[in-house]
Image (cartoon, rainbow, N blue to C red; front, side, top):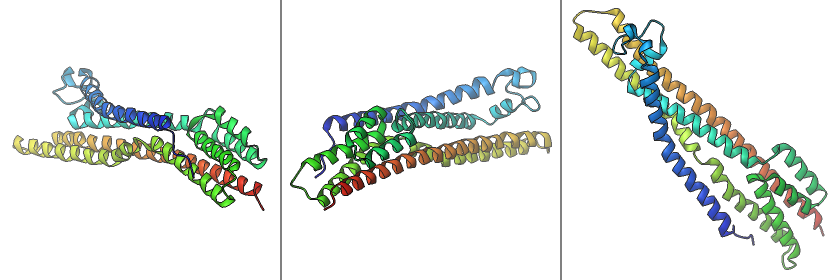
Length: 278
């Protein structure tokens, strides 16, 4: 029977998970506040507008001034873009640490070679050097390997099941830490576009309402109003594009780690089975 994860290990993982949750709660509003500051003091800087007055039209070809005229929704979108970037960097750092100190491919080749030669102690020593989530899972499997080998009451099939279960339990303990905050990035894929469209719709309403109130068609004012509205769409699409690219990159890296763990677990089981053939 596989050993349950030690309470100390579980507490460490729970502490890391709690810290990450607090980080998410704090970072999102902070990024949105920074987005408002950028919108107000960078996009709304007086040099971007005619006569240095941000209540007037932006200078021709000045996209920062045009973005400012898109309204507070642009500020929210800038904040969401910052949120996407911050969480993507945070996940890249976490996944990088999970891979270990050296190249994951090099580490896996070493482990495969040591397992092929049935050198379990050397493989465990390599895991200590590598560190990270992958090495932790493999080391758990190797530790169980030695335990079942020393247990004369278990037959080969029971031992194999125990090793497999140990690897599965260790993987289940490590994977949530890797996947944390990915939901936020995935959500931003949809939210970015929707908020951008909301800004476009409200901007178009303001543009046509202003045109109607002027009493006479003003093509220039209408064109400016439409460009101000569409800046929201552009910003929203930018948020969604960055979010979906980073989400796919991060999930592919996690899939690579999962594949490495599965491959190592299979190798450990095969090594045990081949060394205990009747």
